[in-house]
Image (cartoon, rainbow, N blue to C red; front, side):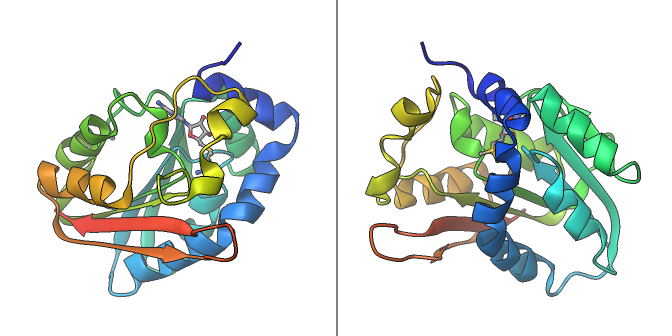
Length: 203
Ligand SMILES: C[S@@+](CC[C@H](N)C(=O)[O-])C[C@H]1O[C@@H](n2cnc3c(N)ncnc32)[C@H](O)[C@@H]1O
């Protein structure tokens, strides 16, 4: 029987598989964070679906970062994040209903947004309730239509909710909710792997 995403990822902490995600995602995340922060002066940051908090910890060390927050629906991920890092802010909640007390300059999300029923609604929620004017959203996705090697993941990992869209559909989600200067590119493509699809835009 398949399980909901946050239940599966809760178990992944017990199995130590959160570390594997960190390794597999680090190249794409490095690319995203360096692109998104290169021209920022002082900035506040949220990682949506932060897992064990490794991106929050890394970004908080960037000189211009004034606050770094992680949010994830898997209790064990957030427990681990808080244990390793008492300085930054972590919340265990569902992305579709949570909002920060103060809007931020940059929202990042790696390998998360396809685990909800309506990704476009979540993107709209982030646009309206998380981001300041002119702030940026940047997301990375490995499970997408052009990356055919990822298509068996719902079966392979036993996850009940994984939404498969192509690059142009993901791009249209950002454009439809009002993001400007929407761009997409891929990182780490190799044989039988189309790379991480990166999408970004500003409010
Ligand atoms: C593939 S993992 C990626 C974790 C982290 N971004 C990383 O790169 O290591 C997906 C994460 O999204 C979280 N997640 C999925 N759906 C969620 C939801 N609706 N609300 C909050 N977290 C969610 C899971 O608990 C999991 O930690």
